[in-house]
Amino acid sequence: MIGRAGLALDVAASELFDKKTGGYQLEGKSVDRKALADLYEKWSREFPIVSIEDGFAEDDWDGWKR
Image 1 (cartoon, rainbow, N blue to C red):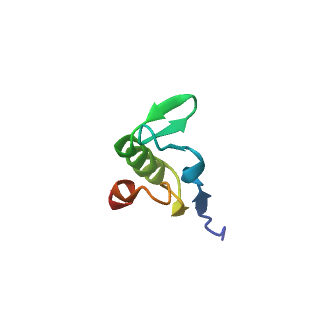
Image 2 (image 1 turned 90 degrees about the vertical axis):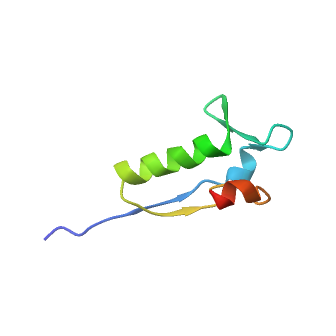
């Protein structure tokens, strides 16, 4: 029997956060917190993600609520 594996992400999103715009710089583009949350949701459907650490900037409370 083959064991199951899961993925854990440590995004360190504080490093991607632009305080002036409230957006995140991702692959050369600025994305808002909704788009980032949607991306995490998409990845979670496609891959066996069991944990997402630091998914939003440490002071982005609106992002964490999503």
